[in-house]
Length: 321
Ligand code: MRU
Image (cartoon, rainbow, N blue to C red; front, top):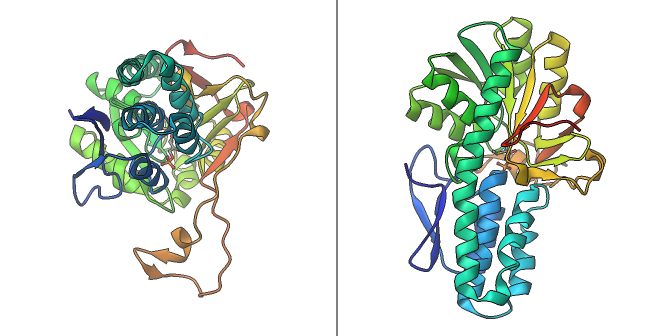
């Protein structure tokens, strides 16, 4: 299975996530500008994959010469919410004094670790799900994409599905389409189809109704930043899901590598939430869907308070605030 992001012949190679599911294509990023643009356009996205992009970006900058520290700043600030991006930049930048080969070696270590740690985190989370949810087989609800494509490989929340599916324990995954950019409908559904896991795509607005009808045993999501008290930033709509899950007594489990934990933040109120271009809402596939002068509120993420979270699970197991 190809990695979502990798290094080959002096370039960063990514699976272009703007083209899926219609087309599987690779992009070669040969300059820092190309990388920053790919991050902003979500050609590479998902917190752990952004950590890898940050680390490889510094390796690319070191190889190209120039002001590596200024380039690192640009990369780290390409998107604000996922802490992994600045974390990955910092990991690679710490090796700069040892030379470009050391920087690249560190970046490649970040990639290797990412696959391994997500596999471990999701194995721990699978045990949490089995302990919290008595029904077999399980009906799981997924939001956004926290699968292979959001990481270097394997996945976090969707990684739990892979572990449970291997054991024949998954009846179906309800996939929130995840407006406005459809990471669920386009990417999560594509990954589940590839893996042969039964799934149904639903509009985000159907999630609470699915819980009310008793169709959901557990909500499984990833995270972009987790504060010290356990508050979780994740794709917009996650907070509403957590409220609905609490109302219906459905466990709500967050899975992430520890690089997503930002222990410097006391709580989620301090997390910077990215606001994205109005055209993501005023247009659909290039066609206007609002009056021309419509004003827009388009936050890419929200914060779920820890009181609504059943468990936050990393490679170290279940975290306590
Ligand atoms: O805007 P995106 O697509 O980068 O948002 C991604 C998410 O919100 C994911 O759920 C999160 O990064 C966890 S991915 C393992």
